[in-house]
Amino acid sequence: MSRRLERTIEAIGPLDAAATDAARSRQDRLTKPPGSLGILERISIQIAGIRAEPRPRIGGKTVVVCAGDHGVVAQGVSAYPQAVTGQMVANILAGGAAINVLARHVGARVVVLDVGVISDAPPHRDLVVRKVGRGTADLSVGPAMSREEAIEAIGAGIEVAAREIDRGANVIATGDMGIGNTTPSSAIASVLCRRPPAAVTGAGTGLSDEERGHKAKVIERAIRVNRPDPADPIDVLAKVGGFEIGAIAGVVLAAAAKRVPVVVDGFISTAGAMIAHGLAPLTCDYMIATHISVEAGHRAMLDHLGLDAFFDVDFRLGEGTGAALALGFVEAACKILDEMATFESAGVSDAR
Image (tube, rainbow, N blue to C red; front, top):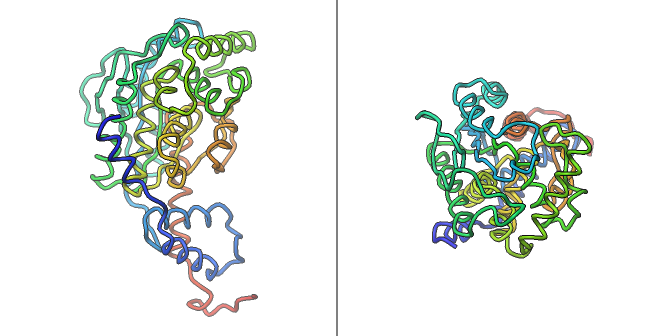
């Protein structure tokens, strides 16, 4: 394990109990029946504990889209060709992808972290290139990457998230781009949730039932060939993961270490969150799950992490789209806690 990764993990502590208690007490005094705003109340209390601020405010919002290619695409596990990864990175940098539209809608910045795209994008102010390799190896015939590469991918995510936080982001959202990346994500879900591959393998970019069955068999073969150790998250990442999944884990770890809430997108982002949780269980306290993906294994992954999502709206795009939408909920939650009047300040009779 690199010294950077060790230091990041060591910096992750529990939520601030005093701020949490103060936020909960204030929520109970606001002009509404207790609990009537549901998840907004719970999120505001969580963020108070994360930030160690009884009345936290959301300022800078950044979506970190981690990108990489996958050798397992050669096994016919995706409906799209591998070249689409690089093409979509260019589309994101040009501002034309769904994540750009939704990020603009909520006032968030989008940063692309290239940790393993086969092609090269032209230099761009919102692109960070930290290529660990040009695509992973085919995980169905051997390890997707070396252990050292897995640690390097995590380190790239730590570096970029820490930089964005130092620049003023006080909430980070995760995103992904990588053709074929539902296959390693399903493999990670199978290993860490201890579920058979068929139970956690979905249609990805739009596979038929027959193609989905083939994909599950590829994952089953990958797990059999590589024998990833569920007690060692870096081993799981190295053997059946992806560079961008490792980078997402690093983003989660860095946010937790710097006491910043991390808004976790869908299936691929949750795979990265599971790797982060395996390395530092307290990271779950800093995670905010956004939506239930259409992907078959996503609910099992969220259950494994003990997280509840904001919404279930048939999303399966990735990019950070669900996380971007949820940033609006997160900001609203903090505004309710901070700006709403209490019974005392408003002169309203409390029924209790």
